[in-house]
Length: 111
Image 1 (cartoon, rainbow, N blue to C red):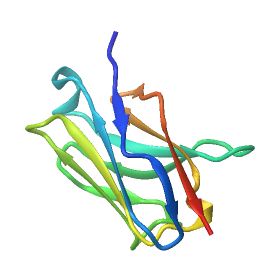
Image 2 (image 1 turned 120 degrees about the horizontal axis):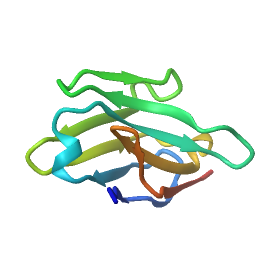
Image 3 (image 1 turned 30 degrees about the vertical axis):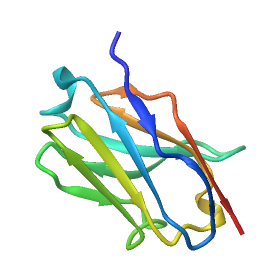
Image 4 (image 1 turned 60 degrees about the vertical axis):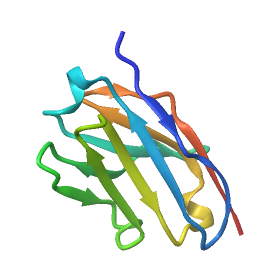
């Protein structure tokens, strides 16, 4: 069974930064689109940032200018750099690679 391993979540003050990582098996990583999603309590899961196999990135309006998605095809790892964090960014963040979901990592932003 394919597994994704997320890391980097935690508690941070508003205005701070965090970097999330998502490690995936090489068999599904290199030639697939992938992305980060989040789900806050009582809300639906939403797409935060997507990156194509060629490195083209798309962001939700709510995170544009603050978050940066990237991928390292040599390390089979995707990243989400989150800056200027706000309380409304608090959620469980999930990575998705080729339709496979990670278990999620909790991000809590204190105001």
